[in-house]
Amino acid sequence: MERNITANFELLDSLINTYSQIWICGESFGALIALKVAQSKSNSIHRLIIINSATALNYHQPALSSISSLVSLSAKVNLSERVLYPIAARVVWRILVNPSRLDELHQPRVGTLGSIDTDASPLKPTAHRIELVKSFELENVEELQKIPLLIVASGKDCLLESKKEMDRLKSVFVNAKSIVLEDSAHACLLEKEVKLMNLIEMFENELEEKKNETKSSQRRGDGVRKDFEMNRDLLERARMILSPWKSLTSPMFLGEDQVRRAIEMGRSRPILFVCNHTVHGILDLPLLMDRLLTKHNIELRPFAHASHFEILSKLTQGRWGDIAEAFGAVRATPRNYFRLLSMNQNILLYPGGAREVCRRRGDEYYAVKWKDEVDFVRPAVKFNALIVPVSAIGADDSVELILDTEEQLEFPILGGLIKNIVSQNGGDLEHLHPITTFPKPERMYFQFHSVIDCSQYSMDQSSEIYDRVRSNVENGIQDLIQYRNRDPQRSLVKRSVGSVLNAFWEM
Image (cartoon, rainbow, N blue to C red; front, side):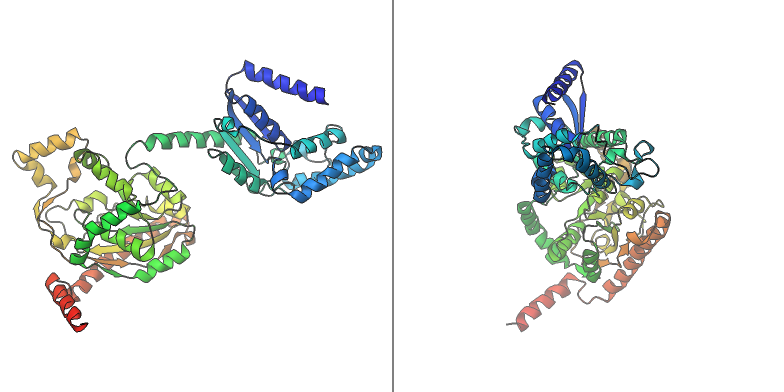
């Protein structure tokens, strides 16, 4: 037996030295061999796949490990191999497989229950394998870290704790990819639904996506990460900067019970806040983000126009892009949107985008200028997101338009200068920010509407969700305008007088 093992290793060694881009796949006990071979030939292995690794025996199943010792003892008794081992082979077969999922080749013959082939797997080699598993140690893990590794675990493995072992191995091999076959038994490669080539294809696709992520993360605004956290020092400085504007505008937030409801419903689900944009965009957005963070502990990932990461970043020598990314802003692309939802991150979305920000002369204040497509709804349904429609007013009233987009481009000398600057920095002439008066401290108003649970809708009902979101936002804008008109504290003077009087009466 030892000569056979040596011969097999010599054959593997010869093949590895002969061919390039070697793939090694090991299942159960074979996973141990695959790891050992890959460790000794790390520079020659292209990919490594381990399936339901038998290393689980040493880390998660001490009782089974003790029972397995009986196999070694029974191997020394002749009666065991002739009588007990065939019986055990039938029992273990039922543990190894799910008969209903076996492919035709491995279905037991009619009238039989199926069994491990004891001729192909005699008792003594089986006992020897178990002892090798129990004594298995992996050294010099650093060498294996170089090899792209896929760990596959069966969700219904009745022999080994494969999913637990997968998690343990992922903590050791930090760059490993993983796939869980939720309905598979231990011997998953015998099942008709499981094809090794499909696993390889999924593995390659994940590696390719990772490569694309690395490339895209080099482009500003595409660095979508699961572990994103706002920089607390920067956040505190931003709050200090925002504080005067917050005090001057005294923002009102209505319907916050819906935010709390979304938080209660949204454990391990993404929450999508969908809002109308206002002129310049920057006058009210920080107030909304600050409120959700300080009052509800929600870190938002706002979707931002490409200009924030391109022309505005270039004109400020990268500072604007740094600030946008530090506060979680992500370049508005379908791919980034899909990735954020898949990571259960909370998103702030403005479907009107630059068209609402870059107000033209003659535009109605707070007009909702959304496209008719329901693009943002379908992915939300796919990931069972919770949608909270949000209406916002105040910013449009705080400025007066001096020159809109067309007027800037047509203006003598200035128009040509703007065109040159924008074209040289890859900007968008169609969506130039209007030139306005300096903003007045108008009060800002926000309203959160009823939570829309996308898990209660099918993909075919995307238009219904879209219409509901848009209707909520538009009707909310009208409600806020009426509320503002009745608000006795709307003007800065009245708010200031009220503050002084309150302070006086509290003395």
